[in-house]
Length: 120
Picture 1 (tube, one colour):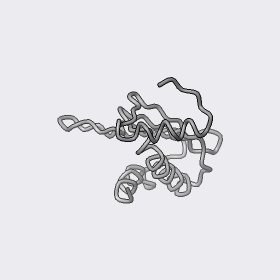
Picture 2: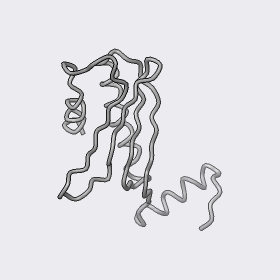
Picture 3: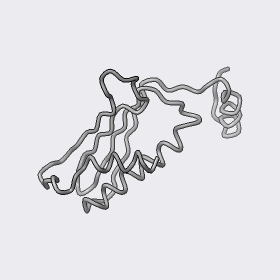
C-alpha cells in the first residue's frame, strides 16, 4: 500500500496547488482495464480541514475494510500535513458491500458477541 499511497499523493503536486482550489478528485478507473474496487477519492477543503470521500465499486467489508480505511486515512493525513490543513472527516460509499462465505460464520459470531441482532 505504500507504493499506492505515494502514487495518490503525487497526484497532488504542491507546485501546482492553488489556495483557491477547494477540492480535488482522483478516479482510479482506467478505460479498457478491469475496474478496480476502489473507484474514486475525492478531497474537499472546508473550514481549514481536509475531508475525504471514498467510493468503492465493491468491497469485502469484513476482511478488507479495516486495512483499507487505515491506509486511506494515512493518505488523507499525509496530504493534510503537506498542504498545511487539519485532517477532517472521512465519508465512505460502497456500491456493493459483501462478506465472502468463507468469512460469514466469523462475521456472525462477532455480531452476536456484540449483541447486534441479525436474522440468519
